[in-house]
Length: 423
Image (tube, rainbow, N blue to C red; front, side, top):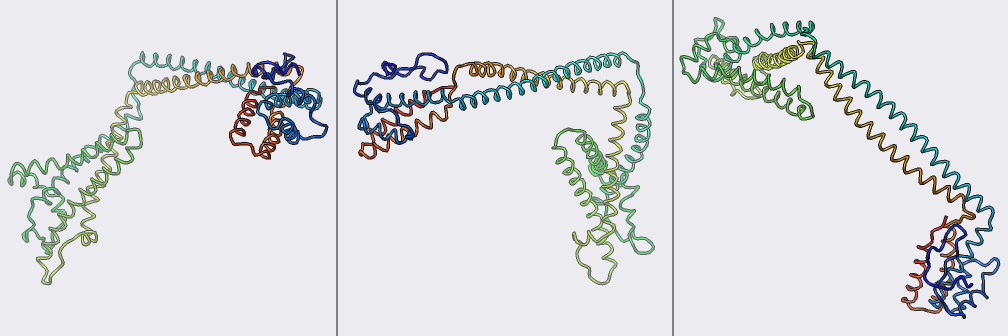
């Protein structure tokens, strides 16, 4: 027990044949007690702790050397336990094999990443060479896009003329034209075509005033602007376009519906003048049941959507007319994509190398642990120390020790356990 003499615990639980740690200096009486009253054969550590605490009457000064004595005793038992030593050695071998297998897997991934980087670099060089060749090439027309451009351009001209005729007539009929009995046909009915295709709308608006003329001329431009904006939003990226486009279409539909409602209300009121019996006032419900209302909306709203689609095809065909320009754009997009892939793969390779580097000292540490003369089961050591101290606490409780003394004993035990570091 002369090894227990000395200062504080330091490097207590080495796994090699280094000198054993020494405990705080205690009286010769305490040392005699611990030497004379070692753990009996078959005695549990809980009972052992209770018995030793009784020999020293639970003195706080005897607890550290007793804990050390128990600790060294457990280590000695584990050193001579051939089965435990083989089990711990097997655990270390298994752990080493796992880390080495993981290292090999990471190394294979790193090799694949390097090959992928080389392939991406080759693809990038090819795309850059292709871009240089495209820029040096002469103009080449895209035949399919040229056909689409001609067809969509031919369709746009009559559609645009139709727009001006339709919306100028509808705007004049809805806001300025007075429907009178003199406009009734031979059958006594007002023809819808007189309201939506009025050839005299522009001259009549000019006679009514310059402001009225500008109003009906700008009305078609509003819907053409709707179609243009719709086309630009459709080409945008992001989720916002799926919100803006339906809103724009909804606004255009409401605008068309208001124009149709104004015209149909005037026609309804004119028809009512020819009826002998009273008729209800024109409202939304009657408009929804009026075929003329839906005819006006279809002639305007549907054609507005078609014009927007045709305009979109025209713009797209114009942009893709230069075949070299299209190829250049595709090539530039591919170069951007390849650069992004190269950066991502470089980051992946860097992360794999870092992981492999961290595994090397782990393997070295396990190999050093496997080479020591004895290994110890830390969990079992702490468990038996806890059982010993539980017996010690049981004795303190039997003596009705104060909470302060119990707390001091607990602190000594916790400090002891926290300092244990063994293989």
